[in-house]
Every structure is written in structure tokens, then in C-alpha cells.
Image 1 (cartoon, rainbow, N blue to C red):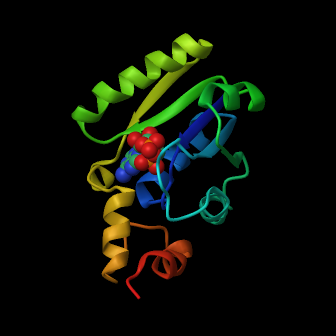
Image 2 (image 1 turned 135 degrees about the vertical axis):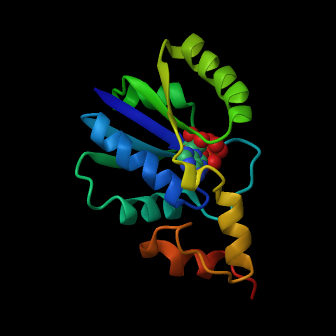
Length: 158
Ligand code: ADP
């Protein structure tokens, strides 16, 4: 079975990597898709976010990183994914996630599976990582070590 784990990854965090690690274990193939939502400004171009994800997923042979500016369901069809994988941190997230999952079901008939975040990552977000990086605070246990220098290079105050 093939799954698609999509998000902004702006930047990727240890929480994202944990979902990828578990997804790679659960599915035969896991596509990690960098999506650029319309109307949202990102500090990093999708290709750079995808390169960071490639760096941190090198040890997972069944993980493939892609990026897209289109609809998730179109990407699903393109790569032949059977399900959408999402991570959930807090109960409040579930309400919005269910709405999006229902839209995806209507658009393409694709099921969404949710993996609960590990407790140690359930309060971690890309926003927190960006904020810490801006102030040059340590990013240990927040961002994968292979991309920490790159994160500071992009987000630290000059
Ligand atoms: P989006 O804008 O699509 O929410 P994100 O990059 O913020 O993009 O998140 C991508 C996916 O990773 C989502 O399913 C989100 O719930 C999940 N996620 C984000 N942070 C964490 C975390 N700390 N632990 C587990 N899952 C996470």
C-alpha cells in the first residue's frame, strides 16, 4: 500500500520526521509531498524544502519526496497513492483535519489516516522552529541535526 504524507514543511521538524519514520514502517511506499497552498507566503521555495526532506529521509529507501503546487488529490492520482497520511498533535486540530479529509474524500474518494504525534513532539511546530531559529536559540530535539545549519541560515535574524 502507498501513502502520501503532505504538508508545508516550512521547515521540516522532528515531529514531521517521526511521522515519516512510522509511515515508512507501516506502508510499502511513502510519498512525502511539499505543498504550496495558494495565498500563503513561504520563506523557503518548495524545492529547498524538498531537498531538506531528502536529506533527513536518506536512510528510508521506501520514502520519496515530491513537491506540487496543485491539488493533493491530483498528486495522489499521479503517484498512485492509496491513502493520505496526516499527523495530529492536539484534539483541536482534529476538527479542521476532518473537514479537509472529507473534502479529499469527495474530490477523489481517498481515505485519510491519522497518526497521533508522540507526546514529546505534540507541542512542536514549524512556527516554533522558525521563531527559535530567528533568535538563534538551540534547535536540539526540534529539528533534525542534518538541516539545523540550513535552518539558521534561512531564518536567523541578520
Ligand atoms: P500543513 O500546513 O499541511 O499543516 P505542516 O508542515 O504544518 O503542514 O504539517 C504537515 C503534517 O505534519 C500535518 O499532518 C501535521 O499535522 C503534521 N505535523 C506537524 N507537526 C507535527 C508534529 N510535531 N508531530 C506530528 N505531526 C506533525
